[in-house]
Image: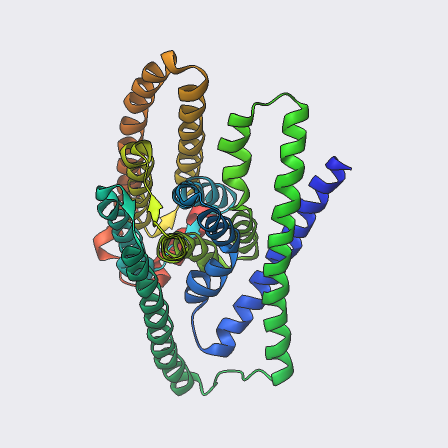
Length: 378
């Protein structure tokens, strides 16, 4: 029964991701906004529902520090594991908007968490500021996208005499139902998957520590994982990347903000989180910018690199708790290997970009990125 529940969880996750990606991409056209903005808002916020529920329940239940660990852990998992795995499946095109606006914002709010945590916690006032920032970001993203989309549509109609296809009320309702059903299936599927995975891990003799650091930490990000992979497979690559970046922004501004507001004493920040976890989250966010910038492509090599980093990060935690005498050695080896490897991979990306005759500084439109994406896929 447990194995059956695990399989059913994966099936439901897949079905939910398919429904959400299909419905959201069609709604984007009907609303006059880009698929990227839908990925950054509707899809990202919806797939972050498990993080929101877990963090708010923890805050109301007198464990507000769990909310911070959930947000930080999910953000690291989203970039390193989900984005890495998605890029390994198919190279991902990165929109200029992400590079100019959304990734710098993700970096800024990640640093803001560190600044707010200087006094040992994130209070209610801090939480209100974060929630206010989320509202402003959402409104700005939608308004800006609608204006840009309207301008592009007007140029297209003037050039080719073809206007935007207007969807009927029935089509709009159907697409909205697809989005809602997809979100519901993602939440249900992730719950079945994580519960059955925990039972199987315990029967195999896996410790509670390892279960908490791996299955539970990744469990709340299963909707993002399923959605981004499905979006990459279906060719909705703006949604695949936007879902990860948007989820990280929402986790900080929305999940952490609301958790800080509903908790009487705010969200406590442990010394370990302040010294290790939050800096790692910031480093992961900062690492996105140069990777995204080089050629506007997240290549398969970048995906392998991100994917490997996540397992190294998880291994560091496991070793620190189960074999602390080896942790310093492991950290030294990883630092000595990760930094040079990252520099080499970035230099390879720059050289490949220059050899193709397109310096990153000269990339000005999406057509160039699409051509290079095709080359990477071949």
